[in-house]
Length: 180
Image (cartoon, rainbow, N blue to C red):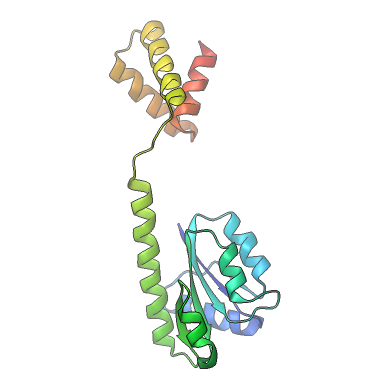
């Protein structure tokens, strides 16, 4: 899921931007005043967008950007005097004063970009090591011998157990080997 986090030095500003986005149909996870709060939140999230002011209570936007995971994009809201400095980075910038429609449109465009990148990452095939392939093969072989399954049935069995348990295929194969 894509998360949107708003961070500004003044809580009123952060809440105001959050409310504006929410009123326009964009779910915002949190309104923060420090970069540390944002970093703590992003540690537990897959991907998202951070809407940030130029200077935060505990650090500059550029420092926060370094701490953000690669799966997060930043929308920087800064005054015109900082705009040239900000636009050289790999972030989206909006100069102050901002129009509500511009902010909402930029966040929506960034949301679509992050969503596309997330889908692209998930569609890549999993590359398994030789050791992992062997574990899966041994688990299939055990299922074939013990339960009289075909190779295809054993593979489907491992996939189903993997989905039911919320584990990956290799972990499930280890569990099957532990049982037999």
